[in-house]
Length: 343
Image (cartoon, rainbow, N blue to C red; front, side, top):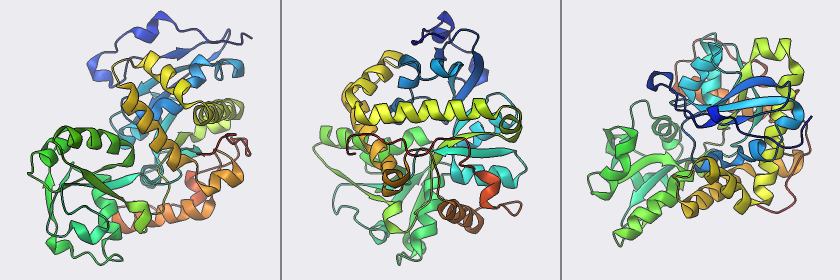
């Protein structure tokens, strides 16, 4: 089996618009099993953790030929994964619970975003330092914005009067424009995007601030690697090999951040190197939590999975009774793999 991976010409072909897939990148191995890995959204800095699995041959040495595609969010990725459009997906744990409640046979097999990255971003003075600071502000949120739901979930314990919060529903791509134009005073977003806000504000001679919902009670899992029940049953070795390859890629990325950025930009040259590195650093900070230091990258805590499900039950229409064992397993990832350098 070759030690390195090559990219096929298909890696640079553009999929038809209706497919919703980004231009794929393929990790090849002779007589390999072909699988598709569906990112939650088109690739950006947080996904830089995964690309060394292609260039460094972590997929290939496990006999896998992996195509990276993308969806239009975790809910879309869950639907596509359940319909067998892909073998693996990068899906939010809460969405996985909702999907299982709707009868979709999906299960998390390893975790990536151990610390939730949902955030509220404020512009100008006074800065946003706690949830109650959002009172009296207009807040931009996309339709069905999960961050908005997360903020509502922590509002009561943090003394927020939701009657004093004015929501402005807009397309996700328009949130920063509304913020910087002064039409809203805050936006719902994710910590990985905060460097982009900082750069935009600096160009205007101003500053942005943010609060992380995880700091105020939303201590639940976010995105992890997900697959289908039938694949776990029919080919457990494939599931384990895929998970272990991505864990190896993440360990490499934490220890070799500049190289991880270089590899990512090789596949996604349209991105700014400095912002990509800053976004990767934020992503790693939410990966390298005490749980990972103790158990390594990949395994999940059943109690935290249960808490994630409870938040979904409280704020979404969870159509059926979902238990932790329904949506996660630690049986297909090797514990104990940790970066050698501190996060």
